[in-house]
Length: 68
Image 1 (cartoon, rainbow, N blue to C red):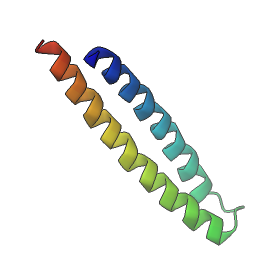
Image 2 (image 1 turned 90 degrees about the vertical axis):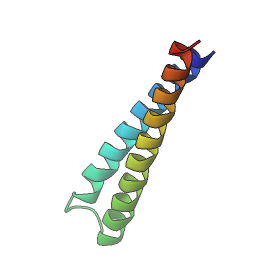
Image 3 (image 1 turned 135 degrees about the vertical axis):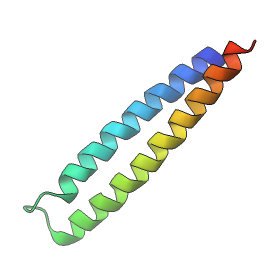
Image 4 (image 1 turned 90 degrees about the horizontal axis):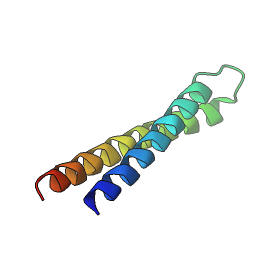
């Protein structure tokens, strides 16, 4: 079960990483309105933090599985 949890967290990590990259692109796009760019920068940072959280959960589940 822990191996499955680790896999799920890795997928979530990947999704958040992609979301962070997309938002960072929008935040740096001069064609976007300044308010949209600020919002995108905030969302990018939030997604990066979630990516790190999921990476930690995946590592924990992997370690837990390895010790059983």
